[in-house]
Length: 205
Image 1 (cartoon, rainbow, N blue to C red):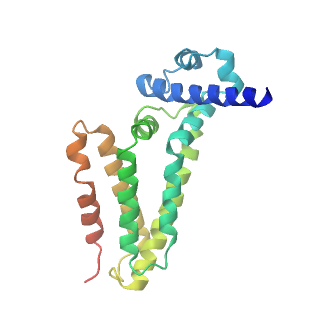
Image 2: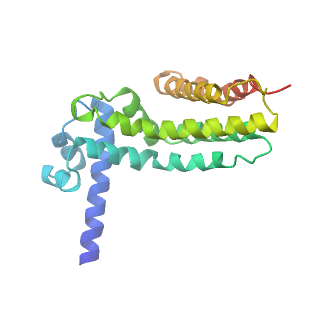
């Protein structure tokens, strides 16, 4: 009986998180109430509060459920001993976008985070938490470029920190381009070429 109760609680939580993603996407986070989420999930308002103290906590649960797997991709960048660090960076970027384009729920979640949430009032502190993975990724990009300079695969006079920031900005631009594009197929077909061009601009002679 205890096992069944635990399984039911997990199923209820999963239904709430899924409903929250759908309602956040349809209405925007600021215009979504927990009552709306409860109705969409087919549960009581009390059930939502039993699992989540507030909307911000539910928002983080949605983020973790639908984008958490993308964090593991960053392990690709840990191999700074690679003979071709730029190829390693290109592999990570292409795999990230390929996975995102094949996962509509993750894409919806990223759109919620970037375009459908106002980080004010109770959400003002949420933005700091959301930017932490970007800061960690910037550090990894910097390490990759330092390794590339050491390996001689990019010009030694280039600055690893500036290159890392440029690549971060490039990824964010492509990312938002995908989310706002009304011609997704045409845009996505060129992502690999865009990445190759971006990295080739800094390759050594």
